[in-house]
Image (cartoon, rainbow, N blue to C red):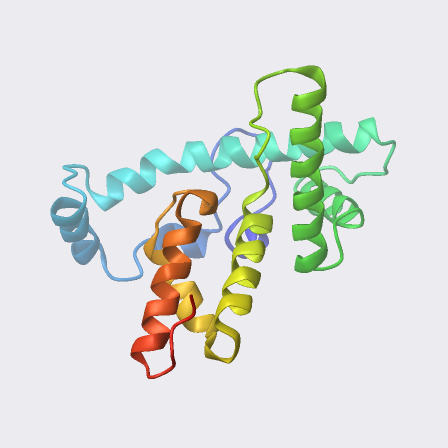
Amino acid sequence: MARTFFDAPSGHAGPSVKPAFLEDRFAAGEEAYDWALRNNLRLTTTAAELYEKSLPIVESTRLAMVDLAQRIGASHHWPIPQGPGAVQTVLAKLSLAAPPSDAAMLEAYRATGVRLVDYARRTKLFEVPAGYRLGKDQILELRAKAQSLLGPRFSIQRFHLEFMKQGTIPANYFAEELLRALDAESAADGAPPNG
């Protein structure tokens, strides 16, 4: 994507935005953009001023990314090209060690969370309550309880709606109330309540 909008740095610290994009700055039109800045964000700065102020920041960030990619490549003894290609090369190399799927990535995060909790308990880094478990485990256990309680009356949609109504409170604090609400709702649909 960077190659679409930027020329390779020419050795100076100035902007390297391709000439075609230096003029075409505002997809919705400069006047509309200025209006949005004033009325939506309450900024007195114009779109043109923001654009001009941003160019040095964008360029310095690009140069910093190239520098970081060069250092990462050197630390791994990877052959890395000079210039912007260094970033793509390093990202490609790093992606080889990435989990192969979203499910694998989530499992890696879950396993890391378990290891961190175990480490905190072992080292007494900070007090981890004995009943603490990862949120996903609590949610899955609560869902299994709801399925067991409601049997054929269980609805995954209703479970998730009731669960989301609880906000960000940990599941173990509202589990019994959620189960009562699900039982009552499914009974209101014509099935006899459990209990």
